[in-house]
Image (cartoon, rainbow, N blue to C red; front, top):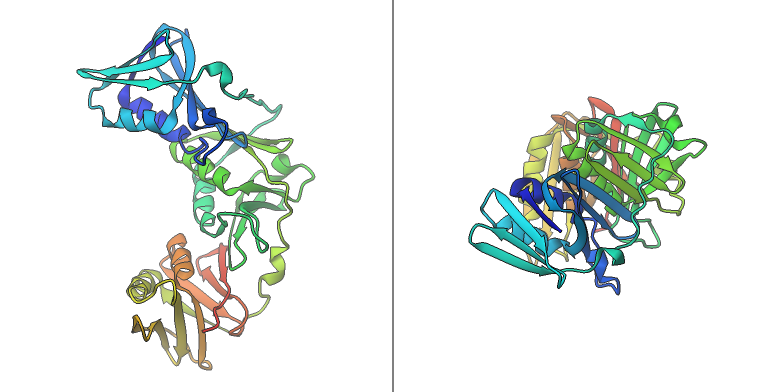
Length: 370
């Protein structure tokens, strides 16, 4: 196996696949490796899998001797990024060591034979559908923050892709303390068949976002229990979660008691100032709403306190509520409009955040008792 490749192209390809590799300690060491396949048609194919998510991409290469092997994905990427030469030359020795040479620099990495790499099945559904990659990516980015890291009694670590109409899908995520929602045009009937929706794992969502970042065109389909995405040079397969997503609609308020509109950039800057006096023991920010005024208050006696006022258009009864400040900052960052609208029912039910110019987006945060 002998080939050469452009360093920048190799770095880009490795950055695509490295997130898929298994990062936790495992008895299958090969899951932390990337499969390299140098083909006779002068392509270098890179594949990675953790058995639930599989990704394959390819780049141009000059292949002198076709072959395949696996190398530690992260170490390979770290080494290649440190090299300065434009062209890298790679050679697999008979002792199964991969030599990477660039000018006067040479790395030699231990490998695991390609035969030990899990079988990588490329599924080609009978029918795929073209997606608006930019729209899907923005929707995922604006809701992924509320997907929990791990499963617990209140939540599952995935995002619900909910078919709300024949040509629309709603991305919903919730960790039990907050909820994020975004609805977009989507070939839902063709994708979901008879299903109400599917739950895509958090790691899969992050990989989908990475693929969509680099792709102008993408096609996809659901095949049995997998989500398949294709771009001209990348293939991604994500195993769907089997858990049923909670009936999130039940916590969305049908009516509210009050609401205010806040300049989003000014609000976020004020929250950053409040965050200076918060820590693990005092993570809350209090909203103190009165005549034409939103007061923000944070901190405690041991750490210190902060208070700031933002003028708003409000003429109702005084209202006070507290939220986890990090949750509020996540919401404000995820919105893109100039104005953010905050609505409430009472101090015990979730506060709702909306974009007045975009009815397809919504966030809800449960209050804190302080």
